[in-house]
Image (cartoon, rainbow, N blue to C red; front, top):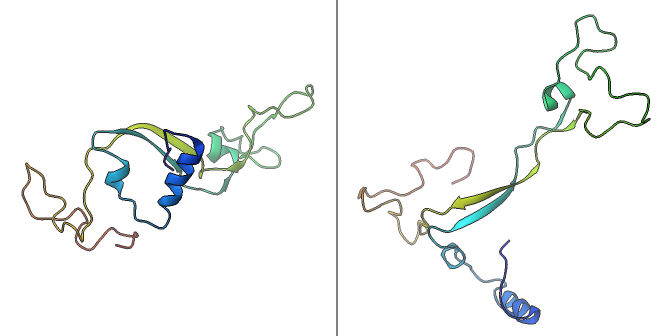
Length: 139
């Protein structure tokens, strides 16, 4: 998602609708040495218990009805479980925002520049994609 700034709401909508079904290059949106925020989801791990999810200590070996549990989930009153008490549930696939990531370089596509990994210091003719592609990615 990219924020559209300037002008009225109608002007912003007209600008964005003019970009529908057109190619928008990364270099048109971002600039080198720009600081950006990156939004994503963490790796998902499914449903986990309290020992794995919160690092709660296991109960003793002879404990009744299981040992990978929380020993006491709260007092009698207030008669509800408070949110601070560790419970089992979803682990991973959480929404996270990493702030202040610097763009060091914006390269060109492989079809535009086959030697797009060349720099002033390293003049070797090579592309940024390794030979054989990235494993489990599809290139």
